[in-house]
Amino acid sequence: MRYYIADVHDTQDQRLLEQFKEITRNTKTINARGEEQSIPCNMINCFCMYSDYEPLTLDEWIELYQNRR
Image (cartoon, rainbow, N blue to C red; front, side):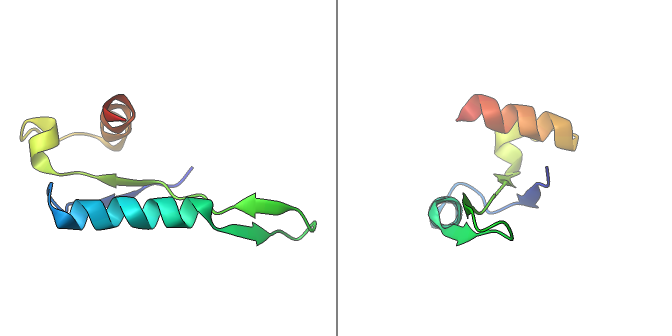
């Protein structure tokens, strides 16, 4: 699974990022087999406050993100 990382702070930019993720995930496409599917969208806001200003690995960011949801 691919993740895309952003640092947009906890502001209106974060709200826009969340809206984009929701729109993308709710968009349906038809795959090569003719089946309807959602577009996967894995984006994480790596705002430094979320990690108490400590550097994290991608796996740590993923775990932190999953626990925040």
